Length: 182
Image (tube, rainbow, N blue to C red; front, side, top):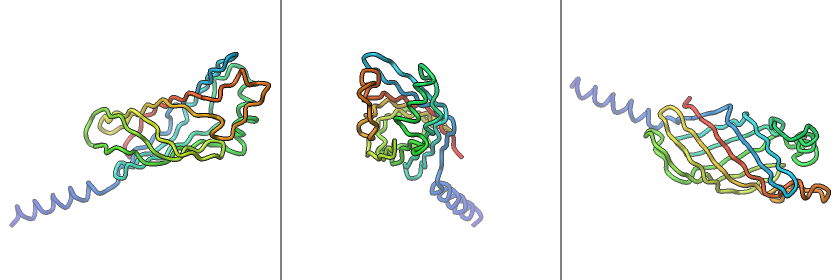
């Protein structure tokens, strides 16, 4: 009888443990963007990417503060980025929220290539996107890296004729972050 109670108690404990959500979070992921226009190359980055993954539902949410980007060629470039293009006072954050399409076993160490489907919001304009990402499960953390492009025109970010040769419509974005289990 004691063995039976021990087995049942263990089973109930294990069943309860598997249904509890496991949330992975990060507060210091990096985002780099690159504009390669005919007359100018612009690189900027931030180490303030914040995000979470709910492993029980395969849902995710990420956000970055627009004013956190650094590394522009000149201070005036950063000023134009925040005031004229991204309008960071009006639209202070960019976000990406959605679901990981593939099934991932977060309890097993390994590397996976997944597709993240969600809503990318930049400059107040939401676009449904599927973004391919590489993830590595290391035990109590998940490392994510991704490379994708964003078209300024998709987010109603105008390029004035005066700077058309200095600012590309297609922006290359690189993301790297590590999320830890809570």
